[in-house]
Amino acid sequence: MTDKEMLLYNSLHGLHLLSKADTHTVVSDLMGLQAQFANYPKASLLIRASDYRANDPFCGLVKTWSHRGTMHLVPEDELGLHLAAFDNNGPFVDGYWGISRADAERWAPFIEEEIGQGNNTRDGLKEACRRKGMGEELLHQVFYGWGGLIREMVARGRIVCGTGTQKEYYIPNGIEWMDRDQARRVFLRRYFEHYGPATVSDCRYFFGNWKRADMDPLLNQLLPELVCTVVEGKRYYSLHEPVTDAALPECLLIPGFDQLVLGYKDRERMIDKRFLKELTNVAGIVSPSLLIRGRIRARWKLSGDKLVVTSFDRRLKKDKAAIRRKVGEVFGKQIKQIVFVDS
Image (cartoon, rainbow, N blue to C red; front, side, top):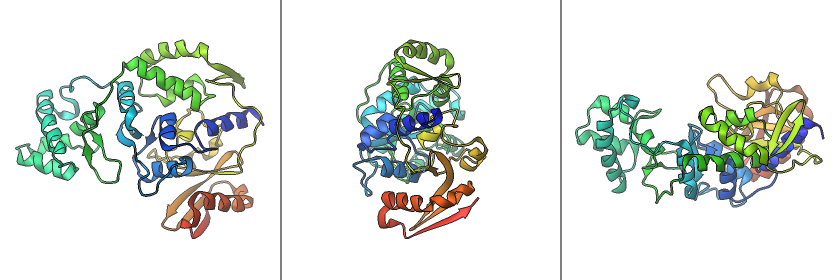
């Protein structure tokens, strides 16, 4: 096993891509599943969760703005942990999203009351606010697609987003808030346990929304407790001694926006630099991919009962049998046809 393969194997193991665990454990260890697109976290759990239920894959999870600054599915009983690490438990900021603090403090309780009474869809809430006298300009800001008052309420734990494809909101059960630095210590330790071995640069990248002035003292406290492995002059840290003698799987399906890709600034352990543009487009969309013999060599896309594999490495031709086996293992009889194309 080369050093690069050692790094990759330990990532695959820590991120539950080699052996399954229950849904709560998977999502907790990964520190959430990025959830802009519902199919990606669903695929992540199909691949990783031992208790996966097709009719209710997100049972026990809630959707919120995570400490990474994007929508994530997180365990409901860890909502306070995620919100505390996000560090957004204060009052509404005056003028943020073009909304005055007075307007935010006036309308947030009304929205909560409507949700509590069962009017929990985005369209229903907009209509209720309009009937209550909210002007169209403020209505646009409150329900702004990329944020607005709704986002600020979610980030403060006053409401959570529904886990389905519909834009619905709910009042969460009692949230146990933690101290911000205490929550971040939990996540830093969890990062090096499940994403390690990783460099300090990788860790800073993953927690990119944290200010370095706040993060570095916590990192400096933790690093002496970690196992350090030097590879090509770089220091890699992990909570446990890394596995150094194991075989990589011949083929793995990796979902879109997967933590295997998002967890590291340096992705050379899994993909050649020349193929990075094939994996992530100019809009920042990270496509579902195929890890073949230790390297990401293709994208995959599910369309009904057909799975399309787009290769960006000509060497993939001899791996079609392995791909078919893995697709059958993951999707069973759901897939009737696998189509291979070149990018």
